[in-house]
Length: 372
Figure 1 (spheres, rainbow, N blue to C red):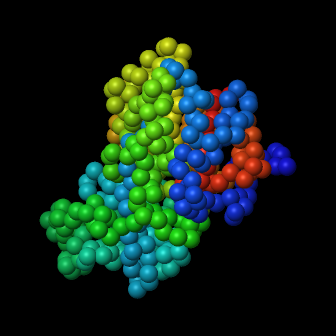
Figure 2 (cartoon, rainbow, N blue to C red):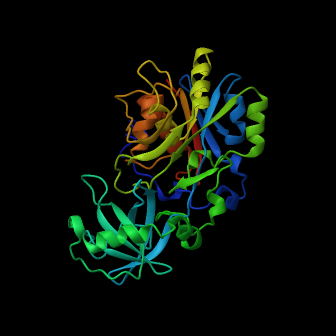
Figure 3 (cartoon, one colour):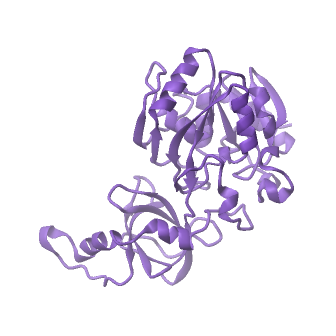
């Protein structure tokens, strides 16, 4: 028996990593297992039973962001590599991560400013500088056509020819077209096979922009959504475009683009006023709503970038429960779960999941955790 579990340091057995989608295991998407924690009681169920754990007047908030095929084969210093496109910046540059082809952190030639990553279709990613302080895992890069010579001579205002040329070239490069033609879903080392982008689509994904699938929404089907609505459960969208995760480093989530529409804000506030519960589908929805809530718990329309990091010291104010996958030990998302459900609920749920053989990662099983 797993007692006294530390959810941030436990060891995940290899056999509990979901290496194949539910469909490839002979299951419908909504047949994955679901653990429910409500009022201190743990219940084992299937995801398609979700309606019996919600009630009329509850509101389920979903992320309508869709995944880009954001992993592209590349070469760096004559070594095979993979570039993960995390997000785009307001000036047209992109945030990227260099990875080994095996899906592990880059261990090849040292990465430094000015490094040139060779991409398909005669494109180049020129690394400018690390995006965040304290880590050089993510880099700001110009994505340019490969015909411009790399000369670095001063120009008016002190700007180099390379920098001026990069600005001109990136205006002519459609990165999303590059990803659509040459990209594939981002994967990590626990997956031994590649799966087409169709396995990474959710029924809510209308707005392309996420580097990785908002995976908490994966088990939903059109039939299940219909059953929820017919039973009086409301649905409302937010948009949060996920960046790349940090499965090895366990870093805090990086800034991400989000939008909470006015109507969603109104529905959240009306649900609370009527005594209903607001259930977030995933940590992405939780982050977006909690980025738009005031100290009194009222949600307003908001958008832009969020760098909010939730943990047990800052309890959730807008969200009463969340639907979530199972996160690897050390993942920053575990702190967010604790901010919603409480550390005891998360600890007991993870203990039971390990003992009962629940499957981890984006193709794995799920949980519905209510505030303790």
